[in-house]
Image (cartoon, rainbow, N blue to C red; front, side, top):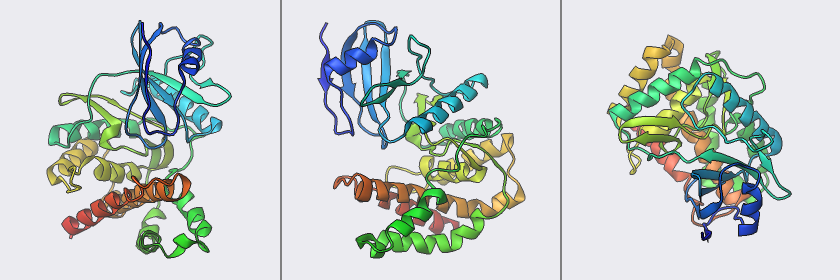
Length: 315
């Protein structure tokens, strides 16, 4: 059997020796093939084929140990409620997280399926799944929405006297926050959030949902953040044009299981913009400051385009 290791342009890679050491802590057979998976923004993802099965091996580049322990606690909580997501495979010692001197690793079953295109049937199922998530009690130790004001506020202070202070994105960010902040301060319903529900964090077999993936941004905050995020992340075409029929299907399905209050309906517009702003902020900081990447430096602009498209249709 031959182990083939294909390098991908990700944060981290493994040598065959490092891979063999990791695999030795699991009961999953012998490695046969190891391939990088493109995409993703905070991890190095690989498809691992062994003599037993196929797995997703994830090197957690961004999250620290405490954050990963909270993530595992959340997945354990979701497992008790039989929520349709993918759960980590335990090591021989019963732990879900494998630690080496260099890496933090989690191993998952490799589920068959694809990222769907937005459609009424797809968004109906996503709406139902999100509403079911919001009906599950949150964990007290979960953080607030990690891509929102908790990170944006210190970021604006950090760049105040730097070259980024006058960057068009930072100017746009401040301008948007002026009218969005009052919406965020309203006493709306809170609960358990996915925090990053984009289409590529869902898995479908044809037009049937298999799982909601990647609870790495799971948090306890205003539920409407997730609703706005799903619209921004799941209801746009590849050309960043809003699919109005998909939005309607999503909101109808969600509202049937977890009815929005009149106050939430009134604030929905602001939270759609907040979701776009939060993702744009994360991408800008990630690929212009934390991990400069000329190929991804402008990817934040996609969210500005989506926000503007939502605004024009809402008008």
